[in-house]
Amino acid sequence: MPKDKLSPSERAILRELIFPESVEHLEDETGLSFGEIRSDLIRLKNLGYVEVSSGEPGAVSSPFYDSDNLRQFHFKATKIGLKQIQNHAI
Image (cartoon, rainbow, N blue to C red):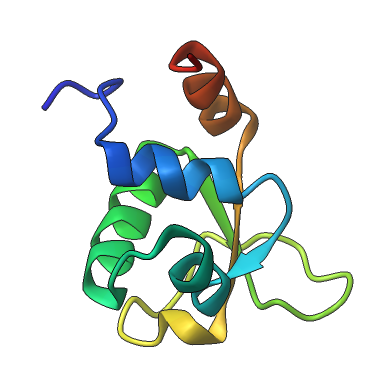
């Protein structure tokens, strides 16, 4: 899959990440399974479309996170990620 080609589930996740959100929020709002969300978040992070933070108030994004414990983190779309969903808007 080309770098800029997003799957429907990746687009759905990015649409939810205007503000920092938890995995639980993504599960509730997208209806995707944890496994799908985990896979998509890792790919989106690797592409630079999502940033990760601890979820604590005032927390800054970090390049380090535990992919086995994604429920401990919050995710937010980066400027590049937001441009991707803007480019795919209907």
